[in-house]
Length: 129
Image 1: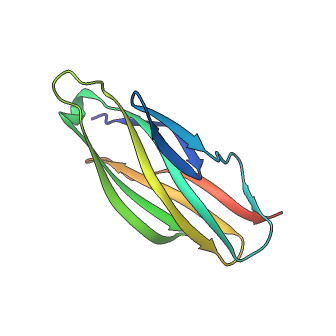
Image 2: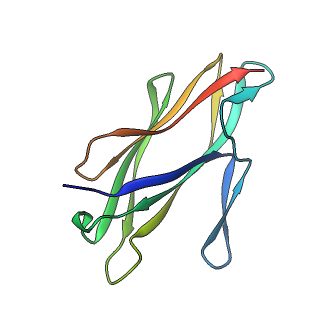
Image 3: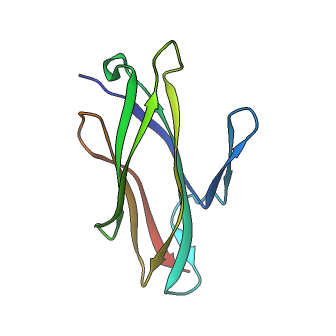
């Protein structure tokens, strides 16, 4: 059974709501994240899109886990109503938060679409440079 496909996962400092159901992504970080010194506190947010499959029904549910160096530091659930002829394309935002790295490490975001298996949808190395 197929489930929603997660696409366009973007790691940034903030995601802001704009007029007309638009989003502005601020401080987009591609590749490894370089910090001047450790410890380093980063402001982070994540924007991603999901394309729901018919098997997802009228509600798209996603479980998320944020890991720092393979240790879970946060988890939560997101839900979107996709019934009544609404678009099956859904945008999700993991709101901005602050994470402190004492030394170089790895940030990762893992997701599970309802009933599916967990997958890593984002991974970033935090390095001094």
